[in-house]
Length: 448
Image (cartoon, rainbow, N blue to C red; front, side, top):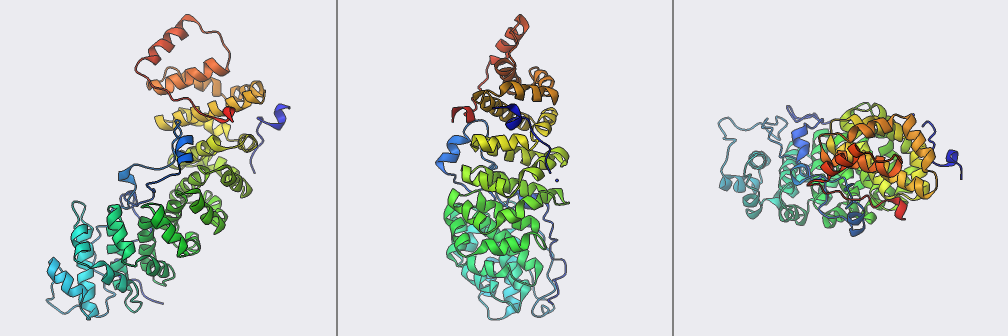
């Protein structure tokens, strides 16, 4: 079969007033870092496939949870203005009494104080609040549509509790929070709606059981309705949480229409939204081949190549992860479509990036594609293409990179795929790079 049919790429195509001082909709980075966007599970099949140097796009624990929000502004859209001289700071006993009061003003003050305690950066009293039995009452406050500020404070407090351990998240779920939080996604108060999204994201990010609960309560269509016009960043993150789950959970999200939205958001004018969309799509690409085929059916490759070429580096990094997940699980035909999309040119250009991990991933992707081309007896044409793109020069230069993993990976590609005789200096370089180095072979498409 001719190279033109396989590895020579073609160019891609291209009424309620908001309370005063409520938080802005663009969540700051420190707030998003503690958002539970990563499920603690993954299917065994994914783990085996990504146990090569291309791991699933899931972050470390300190990046998994939404940082507890520590804004302390007082909401003026209360049921009534607090009486002069009433203390806003309360101890735990007073909070318990206030939360269980029939007076909405006292309920608001107590809930707000509890939320402030739960927003502490160090040692927030999550366990004390749970043991005090406050969660069911806060869940009731979520239903208080006459008092959006009370709904907001309750949702915020529950968000912070759900950012804790799995047992603490379970307390929120077993307190009945999921359904009223989903109902708040239709709130006309945007700040209340946003806080409900964050809370659901922390719940869905804890693991498959709670992710299933969020899905089974029909949250996905509500979240997708919010992504474009209203709350793209938190809604995207919560949808991303869902597609980090099992293949079945990801399929539910696909069936609900997530791929109608995410590829378009790769072209959004805000890099932060592009990044979230790429992250969510990379989790879909980490799934089985029929999920990869659905990505192709929704024409995800042209916008992916566009952000690899022209996006901000933080977006490009997520896009590289998506390519890696795609390439590692693709069929031959799917991999051919990836190459035809023009993805090699921006990948080669990113070999000069300052991020060691990203360079290693790109080298692995290139190695996988070369192995597949070799199996199809198309390696010569692909090597010629890589040379025309300046890839051989860049890979050769990486042999002398200060990072030994990069040097060894580059050397392996040159030795295995570009067929030059080893000279004495190359042998010496190989011996140096072999010292104290562990390299994991790419278990790639050539073996399939």
